[in-house]
Each structure stands twice: as structure tokens, then as C-alpha cells.
Length: 113
Length: 116
Image 1 (cartoon, rainbow over the protein chains, first blue to last red):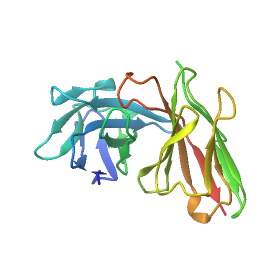
Image 2 (image 1 turned 90 degrees about the vertical axis):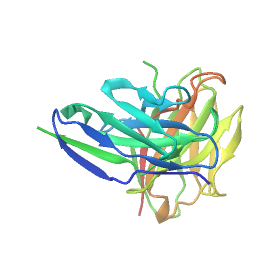
Image 3 (image 1 turned 135 degrees about the vertical axis):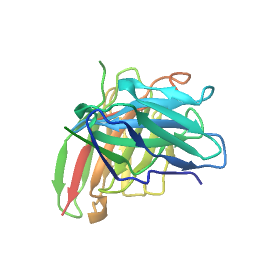
Image 4 (image 1 turned 30 degrees about the vertical axis):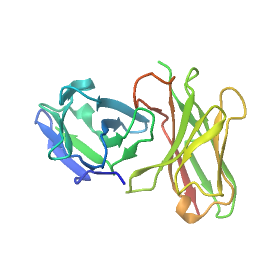
């Protein structure tokens, strides 16, 4: 069985500060890893994905994530957040290109001035 | 930009009633999905649909649930007799052709179902 753990349900941060949203996974086979973002009253939108190759993945809106196989982690980072980054962030994995996604519980990023 | 649209955005129903949630996937997509998120819990996979049949379903997707693609554009989720625990946000998603962007599901805004 596979699973995704997002330990932080909420992360409050001040504008222009750096942020890291944590994601750990468990799987007995190789994985593809994703971060999705959900802005208020909108659907889930793909931020970035790790399929293979370089372990540092860059996504939209200045976010990046690093795949760490030994620590089974895929933490999301941004060096300087904006108010507009306030949203819920979901980490997800799949075992192949066409299998279903397994999601974490989500982390609410709250950016204040 | 093409998007997945879902209706209704919010539905309140009495326990035991039938509910149909509707989705219009992106027009050239061939794979369709329903996920749900109970408040405070994970986004959970319900069912995937391809070539006019269910390709995969989870344990949650029991006999009370059904999906249909009644025409070339809509993809519906029906709950025959709703229970309190069906209260959740239901997300529809679609994906393009095989060989397309791996794992890139395009999600709708969700339909919030409240069962009283």
C-alpha cells in the first residue's frame, strides 16, 4: 500500500519570508510525485511534478521541490512568498503514468502582511 | 484556457435522496475521474472512467455510486441513496491521451455535497 503524509495542516508565514511545506511518502515501488495547489473557490491545479532525472524540480509561481529517495520526502519550497500564495497545497503520488493519484491531507499556507 | 466545469457548486440534500453531480471535462480528454474530500481528510480516489467504462474504482465506490457519460460532453456521478457520511467535496478530473503529460489531471472546482 502507498500513502502520502503531510504533517502540517496549516503553515502561517509572513509575506516575503521563505516557506517549506513538508511531504513524506510510503511506497514499495517507484513513484511519481506531484504538488497540486487549490486557491480559494478554485479547482486543484498542478504546481510541479517529479517523474525522473534531476531531483530538484521547478514549478509555477516560483515554487520548487526536491525529491529525496532516502528520506522518502518531496518537500515544497519557495524563497519568498506573496499574499497571493495563500492556498491549500496537496502532495500526491502515483506508481505509473496512468494510475490513480494518492493524495495527502493538504497543507493550508496562510500568508499575512 | 480549457477547464473542467462542475455543477452544482453546492448541493444540500436529505439522507436517502438521490444526487447527481455533473462534470464537463476538457473536450479532447479521454480519461475521467471522481475524487472526494471529506472535511479535514485526504482527497480520496473514487473512480476512473475510460472508453465508456469504469477502469478502476476504490472501496468507497460501492453499489450506491454510479458514473455515466450520457453524451459526448458530460460525465456524471450518481449517489443513489445518500448517507450522512457522503457529505464531502467531490472533484471531477480529466486527462488527455495516453502518452500525454504523465499524471497531469485537470480538476474542476468541486461540488460540495451536504447530506442532512
